[in-house]
Image (cartoon, rainbow, N blue to C red):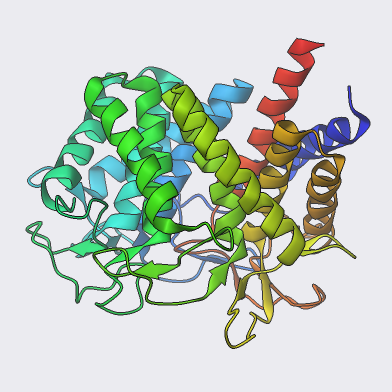
Length: 405
């Protein structure tokens, strides 16, 4: 076994089973009101009266379902069931086959608009739950949600999906999604997470419809959202896919470089695989050359190539996606520099983002990695999805390499 891959594996197993998941199974669990807290501070103390957000709760279903599927530990099954049961009871809207965006601390809906990014993660979590536990109920919920998005949110003219809907499922560009303003009718971020969600459902829902929709989404990503001149994603676009911004997000680029490859692999079509591989390796190279801080292993955040302005902070999730993206690039190309980058980035995250005193992860650090710039370890978007998935991707990829030796 490659010594660097072995080290990645050892680090991943230790982090996942001894720090990350134990923190979420203890500190994050809301024993009083059910489910998980809406927010927890860096001191491991829950934020009083914090509301609970669709994205966090859907990602918790995915994380613990995947952990059980990969590691088989019954305690992860208990947590997956807890997250799933709470989500269906409080976030699912049976009348519209869609999900609420936010509930209060007691589980009562306080925001009923349809946040498509969050609904994408609902499909992702429900599909992984179905995959892990062969749950026809969860598969049915995911199927119904897909049908609802296809009916009300899909753009039949230009393809792709809008950012948000009203509670009654009518289109409303003035409701904020991932976009900045109404002119950003389509975003890379929402489409990136819809494609991972649809791909996960395709694994357990091998229908012609899902095969067709996943194929269409992959080619939308490759043909409309990737800027092939510079090998980065367009961040925001109008309805007809005209870019409305020039910013680059290195974290999303490197994340997409392996997620699109995953989609092509699950799709199982040679033409799609060839196209995706060429595009994704170009993206990985661009991220390695422009977004990766070679001296210490950090992955930068956002950069504007026109103004030269760059983000002055580092986020936990971008490090996680860089680890997986560079590992994937090494597996595809055999170029050892990508494996070195993957390991170096994990080591940077372990040194600076992991709270080795109180457990869990810090979310945001100063650009030099020395100062914590975020107040919470858990909130609407800060969750065990990116770092948990990083560890589980390493474990699964290591197992595949081991099986081939």
